[in-house]
Length: 151
Image: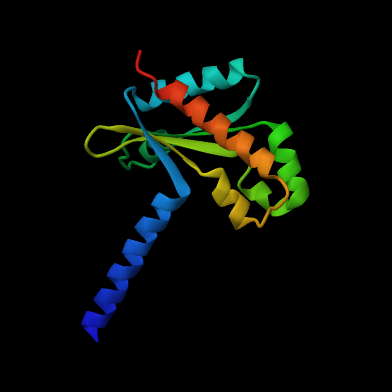
């Protein structure tokens, strides 16, 4: 019985890890977490994309006497892309505005990640908005590639 539980637990963990890999785009950055998001913020502002908030998870952890390697979340959006999706299904509003997470792993590498737009399309059952998702996918790729570009 115990072996079956361990097998089931290992299976759930492997499926969860596979699912995370399936729904996220992850890119390594040569910059610090702060600099990566500073660069991304500047690029977005130059493009007229609204940056709503930046959450410093490390600072939050420090406030409650816990340790966390640098980890920050950028929340941003473009109503020209998001609004048609919410018109199709208001529930996607829980995932919008979009978010990009930057963190430093235990080995010191910095990563930038975001949810694949096609995952949002599938999760919220949105059809007829393929062009919007295509634009969103291209924009996220270009913006994040510019942010992680080596100087």
